[in-house]
Image (cartoon, rainbow, N blue to C red; front, side):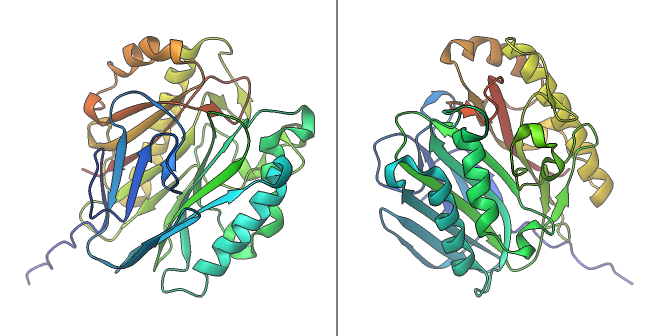
Length: 317
């Protein structure tokens, strides 16, 4: 008996601008779009296109964007902060996100990006990132945390004013991943804030196809729940890459497919200090990740003591 033909990939990512993209990310400031991310490019591609076949419906305004395909959908929101209240903005953004997603044909949240300025402003539990986590937790439903989606939260350049939330949604759930080297973020101890961050370390999409995709959440120099290599951006990046290697091993165990650096479709490296670009590029030159797929962006890590964070998409081999 002949075995059935493998199912082709439903999603692929290219580090360039594509008009047909389900999610057309642009890394630039001063553009009134929820998909224009205010993390200026320092080197590498300034665009990232998430391709998911034919789009059946789409629209974009200054405050929202949405697009629907057969298997995947986009919902993106840009909300003004009232008097710098990031907690209230986060709660409202996630309320609107769930209202848009849950009753739709794509009710599962797979991957979320959160961007807002001055992410580390404020001391202790008044830090803006911690207030964002409180607002998000106040708004989400039980399904959101069972398990939480892969996610990133990065500080953009400029003064506080707007929160952008971009979500990849699907007809079917992803396979959520945790990293054995790291405490699950949703189990962080109280010292990291009044509410633990709501995200998984990664997600596997299209596990039933010939080439599943691994979506790595924002990954930094954290082992257990402790930040390491403070003041050394290059070593922080190496530790982040060790965490990425561990996540790829977890994905391989879940799918039976190999995930390797050469299979990277797009990688973002967020740098707190533009002066660390050369050191970061020197580290990345040793990894086997194709250099033309790496976007180096100016962005602040949610932990104020850390200087670099990466995230990426890897196609199985």
